[in-house]
Length: 227
Ligand code: SF4
Image (cartoon, rainbow, N blue to C red; front, side, top):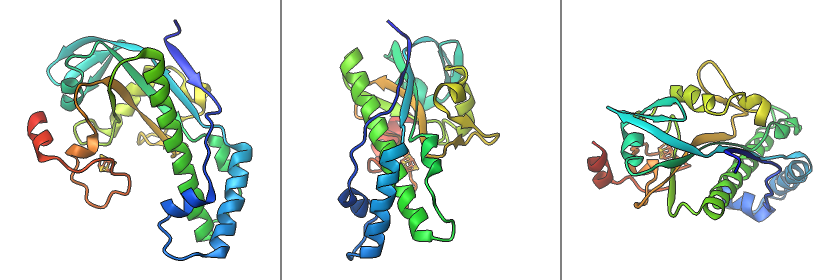
């Protein structure tokens, strides 16, 4: 069985209604709807969302670190989450650099805003697709994920270690890391999927109030468990 695989051309089915909903538009606006339809048409023509994942095994645990595929990851929370795991799935998912080819006049703020929302939705679809694919192919039971940079405990600088697990990620799926460990294209997500008995989401440990991407309520009981 292959230990590394790329899911290419991940399908997405996003319609005007979905985008309008995600933009939380309170009133119907024909001009904006026309912009969205135009962008959606362009996105459907050229987008190529991709997911890269690897089947990896825990090789050791020490202090607040865990060794996966020869790479040391420094995170107390990750180490606790992987306490009973043997097999994990490091991954990188991207909405794809192809979307950068869509014409967005920088001073047309609304067009830039709508395109950003569409890219975000394509990325979310691709992450969901990978999660479902892993669940079906490897039957790991319940899985959760952690992403470097989502919590102070696992800083964004750990992207470098995560990328090193895959080799040349830019060649594989067109995602590169800047010197400050930001992924380009920006609409990309990286992390590790792992089997879990409990429902874990980093947001449960995160106190950031105004986060539009929150996936779960802050949970003080969970914070106690990990401290
Ligand atoms: S609340 Fe927002 S910033 Fe905090 S972990 Fe969740 S998505 Fe990340």
